[in-house]
Image 1 (cartoon, rainbow, N blue to C red):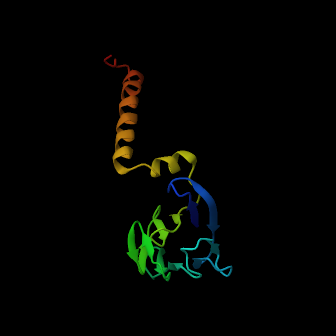
Image 2: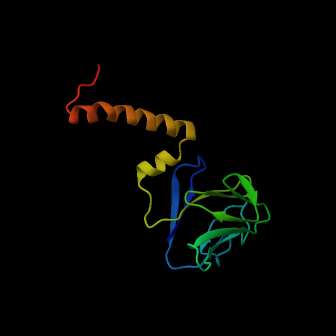
Image 3: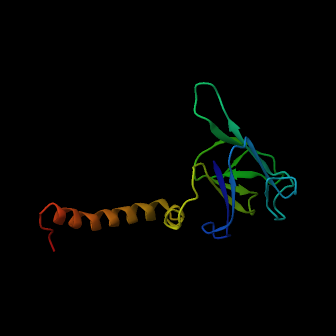
Length: 148
């Protein structure tokens, strides 16, 4: 399954979702002939295409082909063709809209979306804080005492 989210201009909050099951290509652009229609002046009529790649002996994967006049950016890098990974961001032109791609069997919940929108440093700090909160509780369950 492929899930695409059109993000707000802050790059964090989803405005619209598209879910695709059992499809081998997904076209993105301004034209009504696309499966994902993005109405923005920076977006080309046929801006990019996502393709399922199946090779014998390998797990299926997805790739993106950038076709837009103003460029297609995968995780901030200008591309014409690249492999897609879960939670990658696709920007349609330098000042264009941003899509987030999920290659999984469910739509991410609110906490996952919030966590993934944080910087890597903020993610590490949050994980460290959560780990420190869990330690005293785990020690108490084990019969130990936690220092105060």
